[in-house]
Amino acid sequence: MHNDKTIDRIIFALEKENIKTFGFCNFPSFEETNSLWQRLQSSEIPLSLSYLRKKVWGNPKEFVTWARGIITFAIPYNTTFENSIEVTKSDRVWVSRYSYGDDYHLILRKKLKLIKHFLLQEGFKARICVDSFPIFERSVAVKSGLGFIGRNGLLINEMIGSYLFLGEVITDISFDENIELKAVSDNRFCSKCNRCVDACPTKALKGDGSVNPSKCISSYNVEWRRELPLNAPNFFKNLFGCDICQEVCPYNRKKPLTEESCFKPKKGLYAPRIGDLLKMDEIEIEKLIEGTSLKRRGAKGIMNNLKKICSL
Image 1 (cartoon, rainbow, N blue to C red):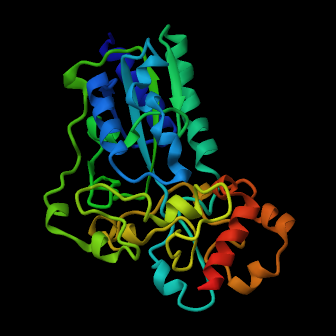
Image 2 (image 1 turned 135 degrees about the horizontal axis):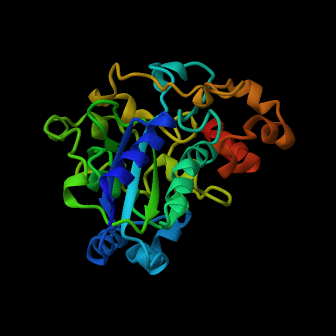
């Protein structure tokens, strides 16, 4: 269990790292995680996301038997209100907002080290999670009161929208129900809106908050590890990732841009010209994406993405 002093000090540590949106919840039960995992198995999962078939997603506590609670946080990353479709009408391609700055995995882990260090000093256990643990973080964020899942399958916070990086610190602290923050937004407007579903160029959004990953552009231009399959969807000038469903979302209209300068686009990655990229070899592409999330796809993968776009 915790005491109020512990919570106050955790909040102080979060605010010191300029983390303004956070919440607390108890670790999901086996029934919760297994239900989400079983539901996922009924969808068509492409080879690029085959790791989601692993049973650990249905019972993550098997690997952290001591886990009792989770501290969840969200950091905005959007740096521009420009629309990707408009920007790429000429000879440009789009690199998703979340990936054209410094690699968020490193930035978020650095921010959470202070919280982890504090918990360890206090005698608690702690583990940082930034895409590094089999937990359905969007459902945990909802459980922590950070928002709701929109029709596009993303977490939406009424105050700051959906351009959010999520991270967690798992701990052996068991939080009281009254410490779990109340939801800061609800989906009463989302339930009446269908803009993201209508805008998705590959019709990957089902409209109920779930996504068909076999149709989702990001499943292929981000996650794929080999030569792109013939049935991969049209990328529509999206070189890496896709922002379309978020760009049309009313919750993202005129929301504050990020205060983190590290998420601003690195040189050559904001809507790069196709001609400039075609002139680069693999070594030059590798240098261009160094230190960003595009490293996940790798230089060869980025070149394959570009070939697919140019072949259309």
